[in-house]
Length: 380
Image (cartoon, rainbow, N blue to C red; front, side, top):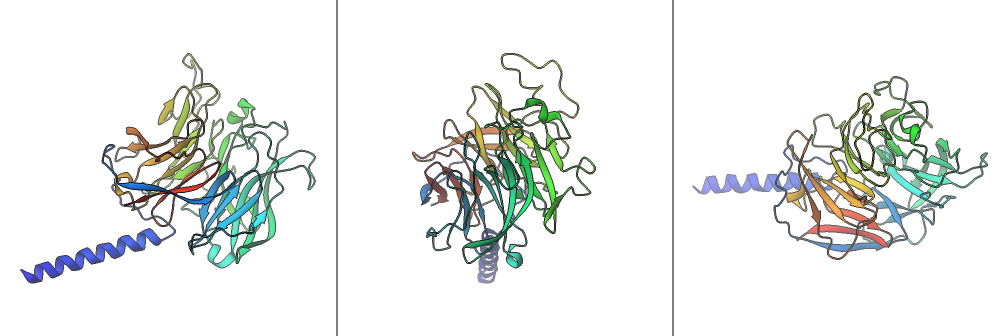
């Protein structure tokens, strides 16, 4: 009997060690079986990580430092592993901040440990060969909290000089490719035009100092991964599928039909044909993919993340997303095939709001932002 107890204790210790290693790893290794019960009680607290000015996007380096963008200051900033905010910015970008422009996305390169590369997406003020603002992806080399050697990877000029529907965010996928979401620049028909960049989610391969279309993209020779999108602020990868090629993304409707979408390779999400306020579209485009979730009146969904952490196990595998207008954070519970909703629930943020970003941190906590700072949900 004692031997069985010792064996059982050893197995429990081994399982605990595996869970710790999984939590500390930069790449998530979630359970293959997500939590399906929408109403399991969860015990947690919400705490502020740092004060910040309009923090838009978050990402972590392998050593656990948190890098984030500030929309209006143009600062790329870093929080050290001891929780202290570095006084000096890592880099300052010359941002145009009218409308929905600014310093928007950040993505730590998969080869950061050897290169120090960090990518950002922002709206540059006129200059550098342009008489109009330009949405741009730039790569810098970071070391010791300081950036250097900016390299322009792609420019997407604001040819209409419109202030709205800039998108966007950037993330590296589990396939090592760099993904970009970008709004349709308030030109609705561009979302269906396969010859322009706006209104899409793009998938790039980094080759040296260039971004190119991967050979296995859904449209041969094209960087488009999905299209027919109006103004998608963020997306995340579904680590609960075998191939991880499925994404979840938010999208903003006009005066109706905000969406949470399952993004499939080559999928067409219908804008502008599918969004008819007060009626039903009579014709939908080829390859149309219906939204996973939809809401009217609009709340302007922004950040989205598939929760892969361990601090709130009751929410593992659920899709968390935030709303600009209301500050709500919701969690979408999916079936085992990750294709339809079991339920959607609000998360009590204990008096705080999530207006912009949400991410799973390497510590297994849920990080989120509003105009004033960065917060996290931790188990207790």
